[in-house]
Length: 293
Ligand code: GUN
Image 1: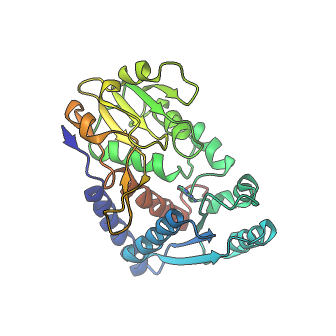
Image 2 (image 1 turned 120 degrees about the vertical axis):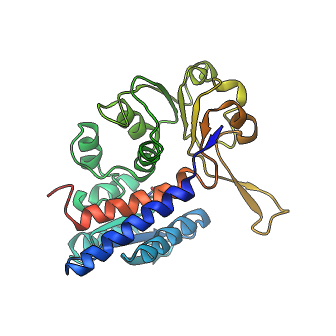
Image 3 (image 1 turned 120 degrees about the horizontal axis):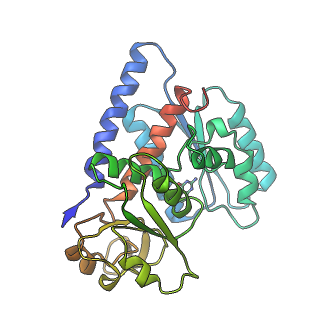
C-alpha cells in the first residue's frame, strides 16, 4: 500500500508559488492578494481560515481577514462582498461556509463577482467547469486532481465511485473525472444517502472517493483489493485524552482499509493539505487574469 503524502505535495506547490511570487515581484507585477470573510465563531471554520491566511503569508501573497460577529446581518455581509468585488487590490476572496442560519448562503455566493470567486462556488464558474471552459475549480476537487496528476495515477477508463454529492466536492469531482482529459476519462458513479446498496457500488471502484462527512463509514468490506482510496473526510471526534479534546478522522476506516488498498490518502495529511494550495493556485490565476482574460 502506498500512502499519498498531501503534506509533501503541499510543500512542493508552496515552493512553486513562492517562485511565482518572486518572479512577479522582479517584473514589478501585482502581488496576488486573497481576502477571507469569516462570520461567527465556528471552531473548525476559524481553524480553516487561519490556515488559509497563514499559507498566503508563507508564499508571499497579500491576505486580508475580515471577521464579523455571528449576528451580522445578510445585508451587512452583502455590502462587504460588494466592497471586495470593487476593490482592485483584492484579486480573489472567499466567504467561509457554513454561514449562520439567518444568512442565505446562495444569495451570498451569487453576489460574488465570478472573476474573484477563487472558491469556484459561483454558478458561472461551476457552469464553465462543467463545460470544460477555463474556470476556478472548487478547492477540494482541484486539490484531488493535482494529487492524481503529481502521483501520475491513471484515471482513463477506470471505474471511479464518488460517495457524496455536495456542491463543493462530490458533484464537481464526478464531473471533472468524467470529462475528457487527464485526469479524467473515467467512468464515474455518484452515490449518496439514498443510494441502494452503497457497499455494492463501492466494491466496484478502481478509485473510491469518499466525501460524505461521516466518521469511518467506509469499512474494509466496501473496498476492492488493490483499489485506490481518496478520503476527503475531516471529522472531529471527541477524545478527552488529547490536549485539544478531539481527534481528526476521515470518512474511511483507515486502519482496516489501508492494507487492502494499492494507495490511500491519510487524514490528516492527505487531501486537506492540498485544498488550501488549490485556493492559492486559484488566487495566483486571478492575479494573472488567467481564467476570464
Ligand atoms: N467550508 C468548507 N470548505 C469550504 C471551502 O472550500 N470554502 C469555503 N468558503 N467554505 C468552506
